[in-house]
Image (cartoon, rainbow, N blue to C red; front, side, top):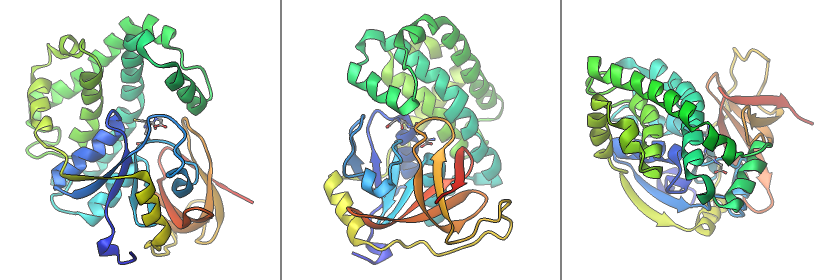
Amino acid sequence: MDHAADLPVILHHFDESPFSEKIRLVFGVKNIAWTSVRISRIMPRPDLMPMTGGYRRTPVMQIGADIYCDTQCIIRELERRFPAPTLFPGGNAGLASASAMWTDKSFFQNTVNLVFGSLADKVPQSFIEDREKLRGGKFDVAAMTAAIPQMRDQFRAHVGWIDAQLAANGPWLCGSEVSLFDINAYMNIWYIRSSLPVAEELLAEFLAVRAWETRMGAIGQGMRTEMSTAEALEIGRSATPQTREGDDPHDPNGRKVGDLVDVRPDDYGRIAVRGRIVALSAQAIAIRRHDEIAGDIVVHFPRAGFLVTPAG
Ligand SMILES: N[C@@H](CCC(=O)N[C@@H](CS)C(=O)NCC(=O)O)C(=O)O
């Protein structure tokens, strides 16, 4: 299985994952045929880790022996491979992409605290322990519960921005067509709706958002089929990475193809993935690694929100 055209677009995800919902919506907007590999909500993930080299956040996209980590990176690759319809109508690529630094960070942290603070003693101990390892600190559900009034205030402020934009300049956040801006902004609303009955009350006053939610819900997921984690690993093992080498003449640190580096997220789950640079740009870095189980793999990361350090 080495012809790029034969390789399925695989998403390693779990159904409750809000970041995965972003990618499922991209599949819907572009009407892509994709393969769903459901991974467990908590570690271990023994068929996936050999391919990511230890990166443990969700989702991860796999195309053969190329592994795309983080929704920023996955979305860029999907836009490159499936350009129509674009996620950036009206040339809004900069604004729509940058919006992730709001939706995935402060808005998401606010929403997560609201969700887990409200679920309180329904959160399984195994999940708490897993996320404490991921964060390298306490996953303090009691503190989140105590902070619910503040979290509601803040959630309301974030949703208010979306509502104001849609009311003045809808029906989508960039105007007349759906864009990545909508998908990023919708993630937290989808998450709260799918986790908490109180969402109805929290969103009641936002009429433009509610109408937009119906439009977002109608986008669907594209064409989805299921595959096991073991089958996906076998595809990765028997494929050859397709990424071409490419230096970045403007790299501010003089990094070059072939350099050995560690790449890790700068917020949490800071597990380093080590490999040799294959391709480099302002927005993406691809590194090649050899794994005893998965074979030769190229792992792709975004640059914003990630740390690249020399290794060895
Ligand atoms: N910046 C990442 C964030 C992904 C993220 O935090 N995902 C959550 C699940 S929705 C996660 O990884 N949780 C821990 C895990 O699944 O191990 C992205 O855009 O993909």
